Image (cartoon, rainbow, N blue to C red; front, side, top):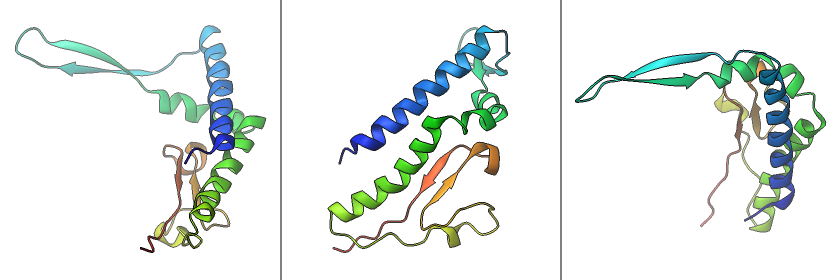
Length: 132
């Protein structure tokens, strides 16, 4: 199933976020990185590993207030509902009890995790039930 509204909302947020973060980098902000040693049969290779999660978490307050962020978050919630409805499936079970001790899970039944609030990658969780 292709949810055009969800696709467009996530694309708009990704492009707007990338533009804002690129502007900060162009202005001299530093993107932290780690150096990973890649041993092999010959000379040791070193690979630079950008730590983009830290960079984004530090700026999440600004990113989350962009108009496209709200539209993307709302589209994620309605996208799962539309998927179930189109297939004639019952509503998703409540995912919040599966995450005890995690604050700020919202009204449910789905869960949206945010880097600035939950100190993890942004993730969306909805429980689906197979009926056949």
